[in-house]
Image 1 (cartoon, rainbow, N blue to C red):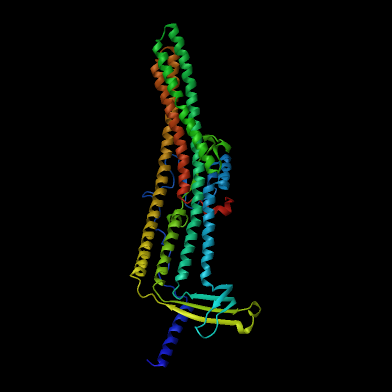
Image 2: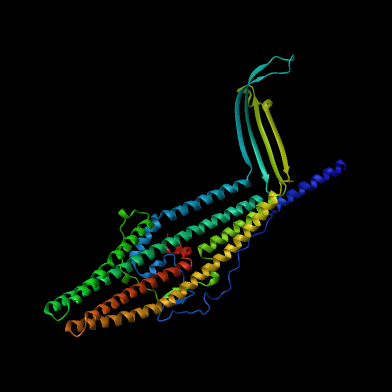
Length: 485
């Protein structure tokens, strides 16, 4: 090949490299957001209203960031606000987000020339060839600057930064997920604590009735109109009912300790409002985000999408590693045996270079690294689909739960009314001497169970409302407009 042909070939290569760099060539597949599902509803037989007078579902209703205010209890708002301000887990998620943002900013440095300066001073001994000149000891002062720049011809660095941006997005959604989890845990703990208090109140009311019945039975036994065994049976029932109080009080303490931890405080230094279960109200209308919007709002789905984006960009990084790499570098400096001559023109030196590196044989490592990146992307895509399916299942379960909660609450309301009438009648008959203590025991037990069942149904319905807001994404995207943190 002639010199002219070689020169023409070099020009073509340089033009190709310059053209690829100017055109912004990026190897690897471009990322496209997964399509939103076309489902019109979450369940096979969609309903706009729960059975037995349940809340209506409105697709146009907005999911607010401070969604817990729909329960109409200012005490909950106080506790949630305190938790949002001091929860260590939420602060850790925010710090990790800032860390990833700083790493992203650091990653942008690859797009700029790398400039370094070096200064040195030393003393050296110089020994020429034997028989020529005598050895010499001298000082050497050096000052130089180096500029290097790696051309991102194939877009590998840009893909790496793209992957880092996706990591930042994933952590941003992780912060949103921590926000939703924290608020829901606080509200659920308050509801559970209020329900335990209501159960204790119901149990203590039953204990008053049982104590009255023990007094009546004891009087009847003393008068000889009833056996003493009836007194013992009623006292046994009274003791058994009293024994149910300590476990409920323990659960209240555990809920209080949980709230302290969520609020970033120790149990000894935490005090919170104690709302009653009957202060919490159920809204008439609940939001129901369309499936196509759900995948753009739920933090876990958005995290999975960002992880898919990062995995997709990593394919481009692995592909670029298999292609030629061009690096430009230049150095300028001065050196002298005396510090005073360091800046004289005679002390200057410089160099300029361009390097081309083409991987030839790495034992298949580069090829299989790219294959691994492709399979990682496939795994992320499957995980994304699984996350969407789990989200749809959670929403469907919550809707069905609210549907059946209304039926359960209606049935428990009737059970309380019926058992109350039966207990009053049994007690009246026993006081009149026309009934037995066994009838009183049965009636009181039925009433207590019915009342506790009603309390549990009310609490379960409220917690299912909380679950619905969590399943719909928690409204974190509305935080600025709602004034929530």
